[in-house]
Length: 357
Image 1 (cartoon, helix red, strand yellow):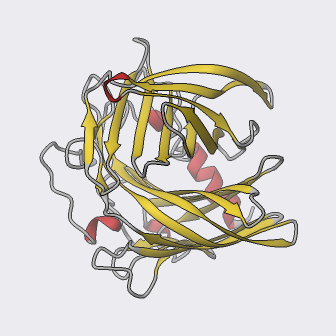
Image 2 (tube, helix red, strand yellow; image 1 turned 90 degrees about the horizontal axis):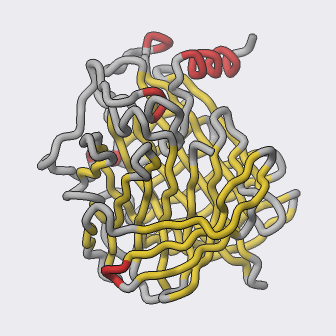
């Protein structure tokens, strides 16, 4: 058995090999409402940059999560995902195989006809994966998200993304045109009526340039990207089994982050309205309404791939449509994630992630 299979077995055995936005019964990654000996997010905590771009090993789980809506010169649309996840068996770090930190990477490219997916697994303490806050560098094997020269005081104003997989690769440069955005209450993001929460911030103002390579053909692309950073130890309640999460770029320059966590009571919703200048307006719980409008057969599952998304207090009422119905992440724990467009009271594009189906 090679090292990768050993790591995969460890991850699966501990139920920690779960994307941060993928839930299973008994809460997110089996965590439920119990944090054990790990740290717990607290209201009133103050995020600090660039330190909080780095890892938080005293928390059970966190991620560095980038999605991009891209277009070639001929108008062909692409979606790109780059994600690094950290899960912990214990709230500490150590050297070599004694280190309890476990790392996983996901990368994808989506077109209207194809969806390419790759996954990487690593154990902490051996240099195969990790994150440094300053200068910023996140990596797993040869995949990397790296702060570039003149990346700004917070280290994320300008970054590069690179990943490879079977029949695909991409190399992109992301340049922020707006500030970091704190989600929830100054970065404290509640996830359930019982009060489970995470620390959560985003950089939704990236302009992107670079190239994607599919089946040996390289295409120059440009577009928009969104980075999410989140960490916690008990982010979901026991009866929350999945979610729908939207990151939306409005043609007006405004941004919307919105999610619904499904539970026995119909779901817990949260949304944040972000001005073109980067000022967030967190909306009250229940302000968001989402309704499926089209179901597609994805593999052997029926998945709601098109949605009506409403925020009545903002006069926001749009219908999202996927670039590709079959944007299924066939990873160790599978989920749906892909680029969308939307129209109605506003027009634009973004990304949708759905778990628990």
